Amino acid sequence: AALGSNQPVRVDSLAVTDGHGVPLRAKPAAIVSQPAAGTIGTMCPETPTGVAYVAYPSCHLVAGIDLSSGTVVTGIQLDANGMPTILQPGSDGAIALSCPDECSGGGTITDGARPTSLDLQLDESTGRRTLAIGAENSNVVTIADLDINSHPASTSTVALQNTTGTLGVNQVKVSPTIGMGGVNGQGINDSATAPGGLMQFLYAITSDATIRVANIHNSVNQECDTQVDPR
View 1 (cartoon, helix red, strand yellow):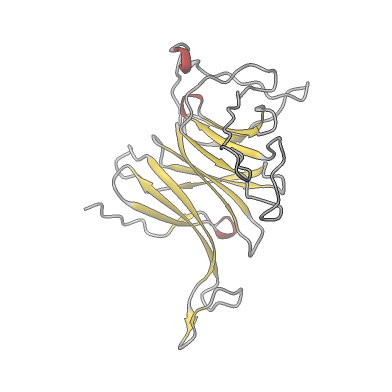
View 2 (cartoon, rainbow, N blue to C red):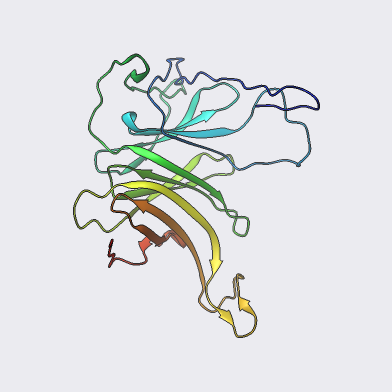
């Protein structure tokens, strides 16, 4: 959308395709965009720029879409166990995708992790760009560290306690890096010299009506409380 002085709002649609121009017609479930850049108040360019990540549950895919063209240029594929793989282009430099055509009611939906929740956090204190992916039918949350262009550089996972074997994740949120502890009379210390060290947290609202918290600082990726009582 673009809004100028005394001008009506303009909203443009963007057809999404893979690297070979094949339309991606699966139903999306969540979207996040790369962190904003530039100067506030400067007029946006006529053509949008940057990358948006869209979760396609039936493709077991989070697609990174170039907003200038609608082309999938990167992404993360989840396997049946929720384990992530960064999409790689073929020998022609393009990414090919195979997804059911849900918009027309066709295609076969295969078993696998179904990503339905996303969050993207740029930590201004450390420069870390983190994409978190939750799947509605998996206890495994994917943490993708993004490069300066907001493309996935590496992935890791957090396995949440799953006593029933049926846990899913409904929503995810990543915190900034936080200094633990404080000094009497001075409140919380968010600096690198905090007495309790630094932590960065993943919050996950799960299908058993609990909110899970995991420390993801320096790829610790460990749930903070594994004795969850959902009552």
